[in-house]
Every structure is written in structure tokens, then in C-alpha cells.
Length: 132
Image (cartoon, rainbow, N blue to C red; front, side, top):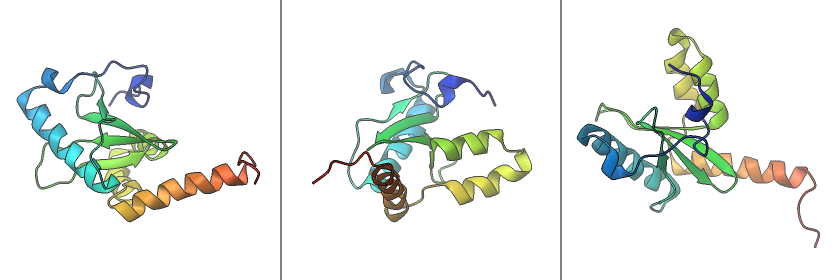
């Protein structure tokens, strides 16, 4: 697996439109997009796909970037991770990877809310908040 900057920074990587993907990639991406919409609670048009790794997407929710990994296997859910979680997975050994994905994956709406709330708490703790 390549550890290029473009794998975690969609602004530096070109993204392909849905029409540019293979039929299998389009199907996998559609399942991932539906899963992200379920996590967020609404459809998003912000999900972009990496040109080098066509089943790796990126979405920004609030101040947080999330990495979305579409799966070929319909019996497995797409994987949604924070950038830090994805970086840890990329750097892990193959023996560690499955357990690390399981521990880092954002699997439901309440887990997503928890991640976003931790961002808000960090922001407020930094003293950047607006004074009343």
C-alpha cells in the first residue's frame, strides 16, 4: 500500500467524477456513499474519490476530514475513519490491521457525533471560542 500524501489529502489529489469509475468501482462507491449518508443522517455531496486509490474517499464534516474506504465485498460495510485513524491503519502491520480498523472505525451516527464533539471540545479548550 502506497503512503503518498495524496492518499490522505484529497485537495492535492485529483478526484474522479462518478462517471469516470468502472462499474464495480461505481457500485462500491454508491454503497459507501449510502453508508456515509446514514452516518451523517443526510446525503452528502462532499464525498470525493481519490484518483490513485479509487475506492478511497474523503469527506469533510465540520472541521474534521474523514477517510472512507469502499469495500468490494457486499457483506462488509464501508469503513469510515478519521485521518489519524487511517494513518495508523496504513502504518500498521498486516497482522494488526484488522483489529486496528475495528477499533478506529466510525460505525454509527453516535460514534460520529462523539468524534465531532471531541473536535468542538478541543476548539473550545484552545481559547479560540468567541467571547459572549
